[in-house]
Image (tube, rainbow, N blue to C red; front, side, top):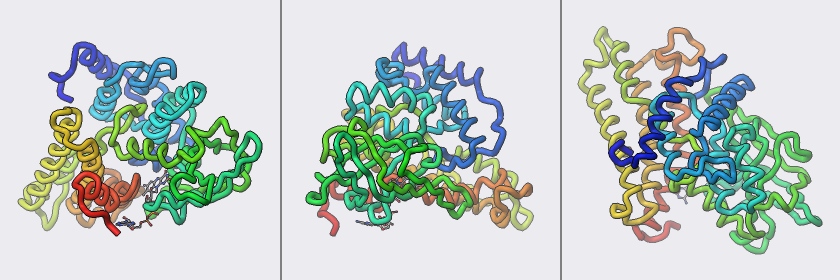
Length: 401
Ligand SMILES: Cc1cc2nc3c(=O)[nH]c(=O)nc-3n(C[C@H](O)[C@H](O)[C@H](O)COP(=O)(O)OP(=O)(O)OC[C@H]3O[C@@H](n4cnc5c(N)ncnc54)[C@H](O)[C@@H]3O)c2cc1C
């Protein structure tokens, strides 16, 4: 949003956020931080980032749009401004990404007053970290094929099953969990729970190591884990509908998140700087016409993406509510990937030096970013699936088999 689109309150908030971030930038982290929240591994990283999220929350830069009854600022439209300012200031990411962008908006839509009071403030402050238990070994793209089963027993549910690719599960206090509560119906047999994880009997969290050597992922096993019926979100059998609310936010197709997010493409300036300090056959990469052209192409796509996101907020320019947000998920994730790929190409042979090598350009950022970028095109529903949805629901094409 450019400054001329802001009303007076928003412009004042923007100035306040800018000043606050300039005066309160956190001290350097005690240990190297990963590229995104879902790769946070160590307790030192977690503590540093939790502390930062709490400060941002207390300053009103997190939960700005959330109703005051539930610990937020109650100012619709302010969160986007806060996100832009955090991104502009280059401050660390907010660790509780799943809590902020998925759990909070879903609970605000489907939760009871008590559930909103119980869960929202802790997610906003970052004190209570959330994870997402949707994927299973046999239920990824085919998300309705959930096999984790919750059986009603008195006022409780007894959960058995196996979730996988659970980002942040190793630090999570709560999980947004989809479980099957009836085998008779595929979609209507699903129910959504706010499930305790940390220290909960019957729940085992096991880290999974990625090709980057990081362990942001986990698998989570449920063996007779008891979950109170008060932790059920919305009605029994409504899990699919509730999960769609979560996915709409996860794919960036709706506003109302608690904070964070925003542009995660590495700034073009970083690529330009790299090209100025990288040489091949004695020639500076910044003088190579092919490299110059590729950098400009990245800048054009990036700007196109930014302008498209703005269009999504102008009702007269929106022909289908899902078009720009879904297109945006595909574009941004592929842009992050091509951006990292270009960084690797510019650094050339030095890209084989990894993050612990002192001679690695930008502390080994580019090969790490490139490997991680594949996760972006898979998470939140693969880009192939997003293209199917765009084709079928937005363009009205025949359904894929
Ligand atoms: C970085 C990252 C973080 C994640 N974090 C979480 C998390 O916190 N919680 C969670 O629950 N899950 C998480 N996931 C899991 C993610 O949601 C799944 O990986 C994703 O939905 C794909 O499912 P799958 O891995 O089972 O692949 P599959 O569904 O087995 O797909 C395999 C391949 O087949 C293609 N394919 C499948 N069906 C079709 C079709 N109909 N048309 C065309 N192509 C198709 C896919 O595009 C893909 O290329 C994460 C994944 C990543 C990469």
